[in-house]
Length: 316
Length: 214
View (cartoon, helix red, strand yellow):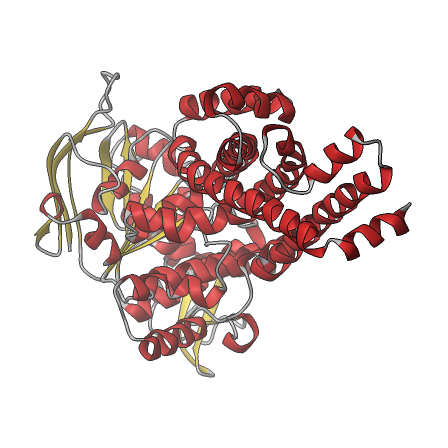
């Protein structure tokens, strides 16, 4: 668990506060997306956690330790860190890059080597093929995979990711996000992702913290942020298509009725989202769908179900 | 004439090899000293743009001074012999090494360094494990330039009593014996070419990743 307690930060020579009396708790084992316009303080907030920045006042706790009292070098070896342009060491092979922190921590050669293989497997790169290549011989997506493997190497309880997909082309980005979400769920870390991409925040985050001028505007689940923005700023930030974004992250099982009357010939799988359902209704000009689970009808979803489920507290 | 030069070498092997030895000693010594001085200064200076600018201005100016002038300028203070020659050659060798060290360090990707800091490298580890290895190909290139200059400059050291192969050249000119002049000139040329080749090979052996990334 990471706790920020009344943290303020101002840089010398400026009167504006980069962070203004910020208090925030990141729950253990969850992924939180820090998002907001540039200059809102999201990157600074992240960098307080591994002491790349010092707060002007306030405290930062990581798993019960006051980071101000820790040796920053030791602290950083126990916090995974991934940055936008990866920052792989160009003079080291893929395997040596991944082994960086284990070596700093003095692991045995044997343990380090097997950990490297394990991680390459986790991020989906064949160790036999890639372990001895240099970063320059990899694609952007492959480099970012290695970047994540390197950050996970010493199995840190906390991972900080600063715009991890920012430099990757949109096609690969979507696939990588899905993959990393699965990896992060498997390794059970407390993850903080800084991003300026709302779709990425919704996709990756169990929770989203929307920041503005060094303060938190709203800190809630993606569904809550989309359906009930806390103020005008958040409403404008999530945009006019928040309803559609919400559909995309809501499983249709939440809205369907559990009785199948057999009145609707069109079928949809139960693990689909409301957006999938709406798309199907629109393209097939149909008012209702029969929901299928492993080949058997388990319920149905009509336009009425869909409309009544998506209630917005904030009028756009 | 070349045959005469060859004949002279065969007749005076001790004199010839002594001169070669002296030449190499002078070059090796001054290069090593220059390396010891220039690399740490380059590392220190590269982090501050202002210091780097000052250092590159000074070394840039130093570089425009002809080698003979540097050798001549040392003589009034240090006298003649090996030591003043070596000092003059060190002054000659520092600029290319320092400049290359500095620019190679400045060319290191900022993301690489911030990743290293964020992962828990100490400042010293960043210098020894990241900065120096990454700057090494550039430093080696600086050494190559310096080595070639020093070999040429060492030929002139004979004017201030540094000895070496330059002695044959000055003697050759003094007694108007062209074959004696060649006894000095040809090995100096071969040494310069050999140095180029040597440094090229060193680069190939030690920095294969540089080849792959370009």
